[in-house]
Amino acid sequence: KNEVEQSPQNLTAQEGEFITINCSYSVGISALHWLQQHPGGGIVSLFMLSSGKKKHGRLIATINIQEKHSSLHITASHPRDSAVYICAPAHIDTDKLIFGTGTRLQVFP
Amino acid sequence: ETGVTQSPTHLIKTRGQQVTLRCSSQSGHNTVSWYQQALGQGPQFIFQYYREEENGRGNFPPRFSGLQFPNYSSELNVNALELDDSALYLCASSLGLAASYEQYFGPGTRLTVT
Image (cartoon, each protein chain N blue to C red):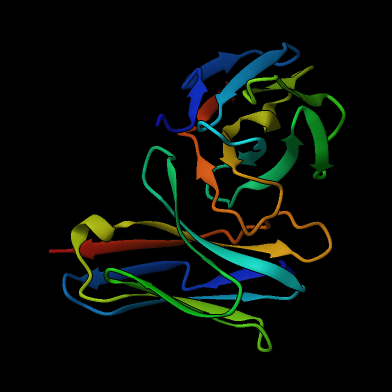
C-alpha cells in the first residue's frame, strides 16, 4: 500500500465548478506540500501546511493531522487550472518529501 | 532573482552509458534535492545536498551519485544506464534543510535510455 494516496486520480470539470482533491497518508509527517505540475513537467509549489487551513486566491488547502488527511479546493475553476496536482507530505523520520501519484484535472470551457 | 534551471532539457542515451545532469539553484538557496519521476508516477526522492554535503538518500543504487558546488549548484550522475532510468529528473532548491521550506523546482531533464 502506498504511503500517500490521492483521489480522484482523474477529474474533469466545467469552468466555474468547485473542485476538491483529497490526499490521505499513512505515516507521521512534519509538513505537507501541495504542488502543481503542468504538461512538460514544470512543478510549482502551491502550499505548505503543518496545520489548519491556507488560502491563496481561488485555492484553499486544509489539513487534519489527527485524521492524516489533506484537501485542496479550487473555487470557480478555470481551464488554466488544468494540470496534475500532487500531494507531498514530509515524512517525520526523514524530513524528506514523499509524493502521491497526482490528480489529473481537466477543466473545460 | 533567477529561478531554478536545469540542463539539458532532453537527453537520449544508450544502455550502459553514463550521464551528468545539472541544476542551478535559486539565488540564496543552500539546499538542493533531486527527484526521479517515471511516466504517470509521482516523483521519487533520490538524494539531497546541503552546503556541499549529502544529507539523505532515497532507495537508489550507488550508480546514482551527486555533487554540490560552493555556489550551491548541483550535478546528478548516473553510471551504467539502464532502460528503467528513463524518466524526468527534477531538482528543487530551498532556503534550508527542513522540508517545511518552500521547494522551488526546476523544469526538469527528460532522459531517455534506449
